[in-house]
Length: 272
Image (cartoon, rainbow, N blue to C red):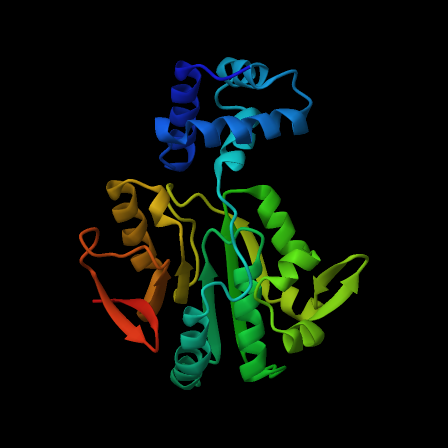
């Protein structure tokens, strides 16, 4: 049974109130298709039965399951290429020099999805500093979807996910067969801390970040929410830090406290 217009509006309101993700009537098919899948996974009689339970308890566990179902978890290893070339060729080498005395790096991957982005960064760091015990590298991976955080923590990927962007030499060096899948080496998994974080809410305390990856996330929010998120990110970032956004995202006309720079073929943002 199809959702009514009032059901779609109700779902949109719940998702926006919890996550600030904007879903209008143009997303009706997406909302219904994802809720149908969720209802089947939960064993509900129908999608309307799922909505009825949500209406009865709009702040309970059903709400969190619905919000997770509405998040887009599209990612891959070395996604879009150029940001990681800039990171490997310029940014990380420069930071290794600039942080040489304290020998500490803090990198945050916001909306990490299933973890390919933080593991890509972890591999690049390993390629540069190897097993040097004098460096403390912290990779914080956050998301609003607890299932994605569990996947990131496990670091297990199927053949299709491996084939999407992971170079063969890095597969050999940093992955082991795990049944029909591949699991990330423990030395990389130990570098990554996973944590639930809702970008639309006040950020928890965190160490000053050298690099923040906030890619392909702002497109889901309205301008005021984008502005609030960028303001919080700026507070979390060191004054000489780097912010990566998605290719279709910008701080222009949202928050003028950032300066756009080009490194190779990648755009990065620095606090003014």
